Length: 330
Image (spheres, rainbow, N blue to C red):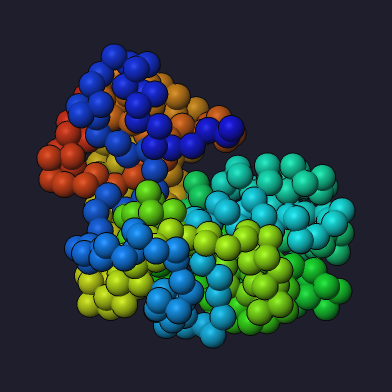
């Protein structure tokens, strides 16, 4: 199993700090969400059915005619490599590590490449995969650049896979509306923007033939009835989505400013997290953990990612810890 954020119980044991005393900033999941609709008893008692409104609500939200709900985008990440054979896959790195692991697991040749080398490498690739905005760097790719890369791949049967898990606060940068194009596959996360990672819901946006192949591979009842009910309700709440988008965007900027105030200017980021590449990343991560604040540490490149505090108490606690670290680092 690869390392991921959110392993709070392990941190509690490692540092001897009670689970309830932690400030968890280790994920890019929104720390708050929208009011949840009540779940009817039939959602628990009956097998899930596809005509319950989830697909319609998701199509309206993403602006598409076809999509496939999956048990978190992780399910699609693991299954998409099974739809191709002996592919040469370029992954713009650093990136979410599960992508490379999934393609390698299925026997494909994986090349981790930089953004600057994509144009040179593209003729040797069958699949180009990237995260936009990138996780963990926050790097954004313009739609124009992505369309150009897609066109070169599609003309010879290749794929462009874009993981848009963190794009909900900047929907104008999404390629979702173009996901009907052959060879373009978009992955969307529900849990990150709506703050419901535990619901395990995501969506694949692509041409219908590919969606049918993926659905056959995943099998029936991939999404639980209660999750389908919640997902449909929240995807239809346009007023709530707009308010959530504004709050997350503001908090993302507040986090960037807070880090700058304490001598830790972010190297990159987006509404849901800020990322700092630094040779002192491990030291900062350890200092914060010893004070009950969990962040996400990366080894290559040495860097640390901060998620958003959920409330004012969390913001003040983080500010105090950063001030102490800055003082002790002088």
